[in-house]
Image 1 (cartoon, rainbow, N blue to C red):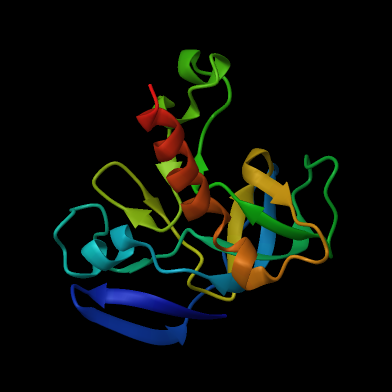
Image 2: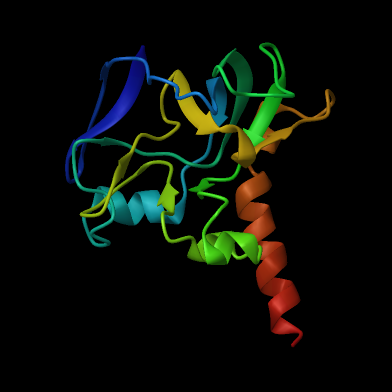
Length: 163
């Protein structure tokens, strides 16, 4: 598959890479639109330390499910989806309390740091755990659906500001 790979800081290369393998609880998504987050920009210049090259960045995206893992239930190829970039375990004390952003095993799509490496969505395909995926209404374009994550962050910030 083709992907935009950050080979070194301030150096991107559009090249062939292996398609991501999916686990038993993952969906393989054919990416149709992917945004560029401010964190990707800071990752590109190396200022965050959370994008260690080589890495496929990108976590604000939408696409079509093309394959489902052996233990996936309720999803099928052909469905239009977007996803949360936070990959969480669902079983730790934080996840059980609904605080998935504090998950003991949290990873983030498109991030490569000392603790983990997780390929992102600036590629033809991305593997995403089923608990992070959301169906899209048919009328919503992929480009607009890729904005669900950043708009959600903005709405959360506005709601938090009122407290």
